[in-house]
Structures are given as structure tokens and as C-alpha cells.
Image (tube, rainbow, N blue to C red):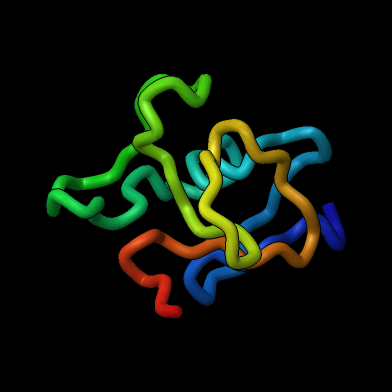
Length: 84
């Protein structure tokens, strides 16, 4: 799996080719992504992009982690951690 890593809040997360960001985070034991704008815990829920509970900032753009393929070197942040 050498080279198959992305950054989540300063932590290197391994992933398999073709795996979504959410699947890789879940496999790494990360199931809570922070808090959303209503101060509710943001967690993985539907896994198909319908609920948008897994919104994260990926390389500066807000995206659903469950729909975004993991890519080596990408930077993933919880929404609450993103500062413009």
C-alpha cells in the first residue's frame, strides 16, 4: 500500500485504490468528522451522498467523503476546521 496515503487533519490515512475517502477514514477508525453548522456530530450515515453528513473540505473544496475517491496526497479537513 506504499504511497496510498492522504492527510486527514494532520494524520496520514492509508487507502486502497478505488476506495472512497469515507471508506478509508472508516477503516482507519475515524467515524466522526467533527461538528456541522448546527453543532451536531457529523458522522457517516447513508454512504451514497444523499444525506451529506460526510461533507468535508477536500483540497479546499467542500465534498461528500463517501462519493470522493481517495487520492494520494490529498488534504481532507472537517468543515469546522476549515478557515478561509
